[in-house]
Image 1 (cartoon, helix red, strand yellow):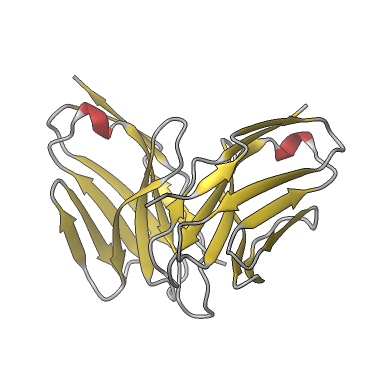
Image 2: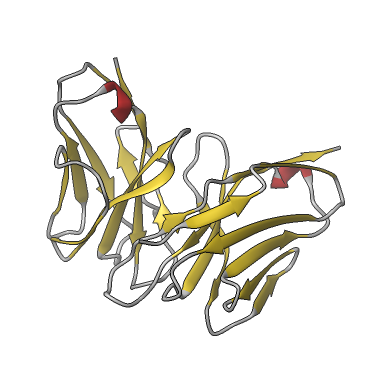
Length: 114
Length: 112
């Protein structure tokens, strides 16, 4: 089955700096790659996603890049703010076979310091 | 528009007991998935239901089961609880396949 690895497990940045989180996946059939943010006491919330027919996607301060050949994708957060502090998860899934099944990375605890 | 609602938010059970968790998806969403979240194993897929049928299943023992009703609400049941079942159980609903999964706030289960 699919395996998703995520690095780093913790990341501390100064406010205003950029943060980058990287993930690799194993199943070449995976074609949907969402990123979730989870704050304490809450469920994960989608912040951005990318499909395999796109190499890059941007939404204001957040961007995601995908390299299908290398089977890795990355989350980029620019101009970080204290409210960006949370745990971030990458995930992968595929449409073949039908259904919704997300395989998650192990998470990155991001801390934005003032 | 109401989000995904999970009840109860917190549960404390004793080893050997069974428990039932409930999930109401976003209106119009027919796919409901369940995930277990623990510090050691992270977020792991349990199963997915669509139109009252289990469509996908993760690698969990048969003690974990679920069902979905005609109104798309779903329940999951864990029988013969073990200490290792202590976790945050998350429910997610999707409008279609490989679309955004909307998560509820979860049910925190503690087994003592």
